[in-house]
Length: 349
Image 1: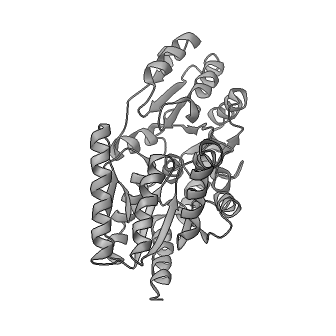
Image 2: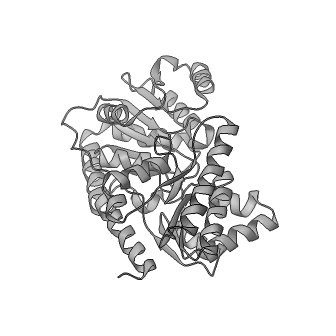
Image 3: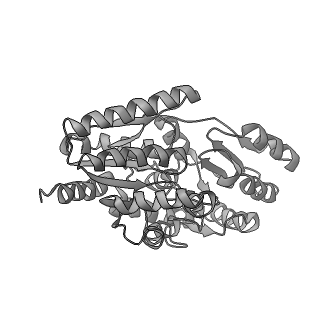
């Protein structure tokens, strides 16, 4: 398996670490190779080259049955496409595991004709492409018709149920990179609209990114005192914030299947998210969460107000959200799906 450093601060690292902690690596004899890590450009380039060299040595020496790469767009795709090329030349079965809500834009709009051909070639020559949702699987089938595609969602560990009454009324939590594409400025605008009617309103933006721009915009809207920016949180810090949150909000403009949302659902929190990417296949409006259009701060404010005002609704949606994770997205379920895929590709079923 090839991906980013597990101590990294992103969704892919969280997914792979959840699989590792559940025992997939031991059960399926997975060797994990890192081709990306944080740091300077030089450090990233060195890590990428070292990872590619390690993959080449393993493929030519041990010759694994399956080479499974986790990839998204831009540099991540380029690194992993070279890994897959090496693995194919060595005769290994290969899996391209697609992450990231920007891949459609990368493949269709941001790449020239030669790069689009290489993307399509990489997808179609892989033994299997794993998509996080049926919507993303449909895109891959349309873009690369010869690709073999399977849907395997992200896996999320199930924490103990939140203690009744642990949430703080009016406290809304966002987890993710603080940037415009994540909808943080729409959340600020929604918060400004709610501030007068919700005296206890608190917006918590946990993550790295344009914190200065966020604070500046909050001041312009007159709600600077209503926001908190604790920075990037480790697992313990994330769980502590989820326990305190009344509502989790992810108003992104585009997503694959966001780990932050799945973690909030697993923690038993009511979720408001946008109707983008694979989110609507997991979060069903009025059943286990609330969906709003992307880039619509008025609709976002209305949805948040409804949940803040109705404790019974929050409790019902939160319980249904956790049940969804238990049934379809737990590490046990997803590890079982991956094990079956590995054995089928290796011909050991």
